[in-house]
Amino acid sequence: MVPARRNVVMQAQAVAWPSPSALHHEFQEIQIGLDGMTEVPGMLGRTTHRLINLLETHFLRQEALVLPLLGLLAPLSRGAISREMSAMVPVADRLRREMPRMLDELMAIARAFDEVATLARLAGRPELARITRQVQTYVLLREQVIYPAALMAGEAVRRHLEGEPGG
Image (tube, rainbow, N blue to C red; front, top):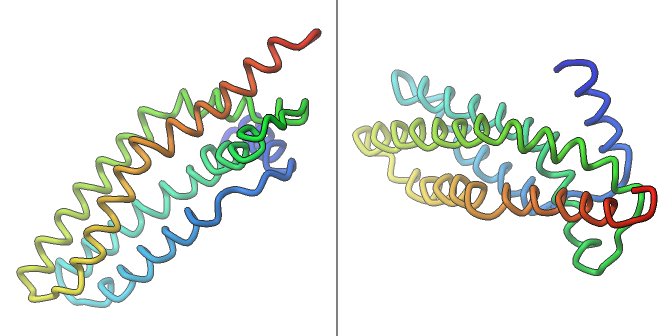
């Protein structure tokens, strides 16, 4: 990470708007479901391991760029906008710039999971059916709801600050 970007993320994370814990829980559930599959020998284990690496890398980016912005949703929904939220505007700007990359990562996750699901069916591992739904939901939710909501939270703060005298 470039030092200037690290400062933006660290500054944003220093301001306390707790990110939605449900998203952390969702990721942990998927990871737990996939962990056992990495021990399977052969292509299924290797492909599952690659999928977990993709998910972990993507989730780290999410933790830095998306989750802090989602932490603003509750106060914004109550009309509780503060000047301290201005620390999130650069995070929203960075998310907007990195959105194509994040969407590409989601597509790579979906493709890797399709591979894992196919290999699991061929190997007679039906326990992946539940995880299939979880990963499909993970991808679609981010693409259709979570990332747009994070961008809207940052935009709401920006618009509020632009409307303030000196903002």
